[in-house]
Length: 293
Image (cartoon, rainbow, N blue to C red; front, side, top):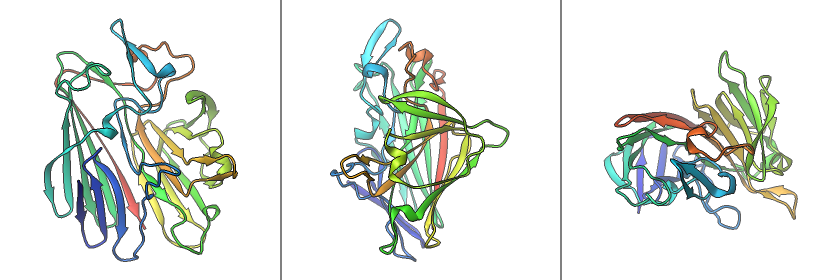
């Protein structure tokens, strides 16, 4: 089922499957900003990643002496959410685990995802409720894909990514090798990266302590600002087409509370790099915002 919200600036379509944003159309400039979900490149548009972000080493983890298997990015992107509350420009989705995923993730939880329109911006809010008697370990992340180029007379190479690092924090760059994280080094001087296919030969670019990334064109004033103050990590990805030496016609800007396993991981979920810990009965809350120009 597709749910729509809109205001004077934007019309947004959200699928109940995964509570996934599938389309964002600007009503004043006529542009569609989200990737189409063409499976020839990548069949998703804006999945929510939970209870892991990225890949686990050997696609498994250990918790309290038991080994569990889980595929990349977890399972929340594939569950059907219910609409909790809806107005013209605001909708909340809810999913309760209710024992359905204990074989792969031994925790009970409730996930609430809310989308709020504010002029040209879409605010995304997450709530994860720990419904267990013990603390819960998890990661959560966003994976929105933006269509490129936005205008017919542009090319992907006309676009650039502008970075706003978090104040008083060091920015680290990471690289993926066989889908596992390796620390690459300090990137505190990062400011602008022109978009080229070669960026994604080795998968995603990953950084810590970035507060905002702006996708801008050299040819027009159109683009997307993704604002995610306080998120510890961000990934930037497009599918690299090796045979042609090109990238897919989209780029993902992915704010994360979590990250893929490192090569040297112990495999114990409680020791996982970047994992979040939520006490019994407590609620984790986070939000990010996308502004469409």
